[in-house]
Length: 202
Image (cartoon, rainbow, N blue to C red; front, side, top):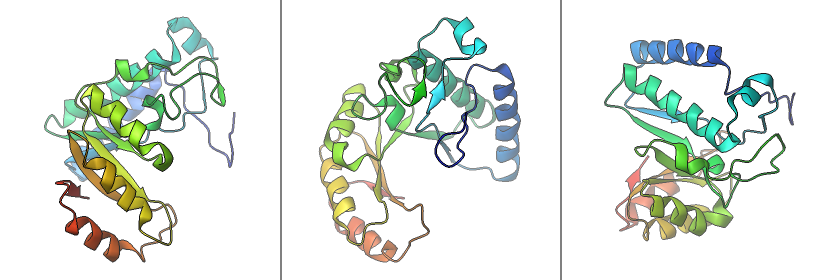
């Protein structure tokens, strides 16, 4: 079923999905050879109701964790030395990792218990940044901040940089725009370079 402006979720329980991803990662490695991969596993608004999901007899948290784990395994098969990032929301009880989420049949609570320990978590919910970063910090994951989001000021990245100072494994901060709005990129770089938080600039 289409959600919002035509977004359609693939089924995480269908074997064909992993055949497609396997081929895609092989081609990405062959033609681009990146050091880092970013899994776009955010805002999963459908799932759990089809026969493939029902036959697994798993929670949606387990289905999601299995899907993420299998994606990471495919990446490592072709690129063992790579690092993998993922959006935070479906793994965060302060965000979307709960029950009663859109058209999902089931509950994403506890999804963070079923994912690889070497993932890097990209947090993006500014209003819950303290709770979110603390959640993943307690679990031992490196934290990556997705800052900015089209604001006209730099208060958003300032807030992220502030919370990253209290994180044991700050991985970095990213200039995040969905509208190709790069007017603040220079100021953003200056702000990050002036910090003494020890985080990387991405």
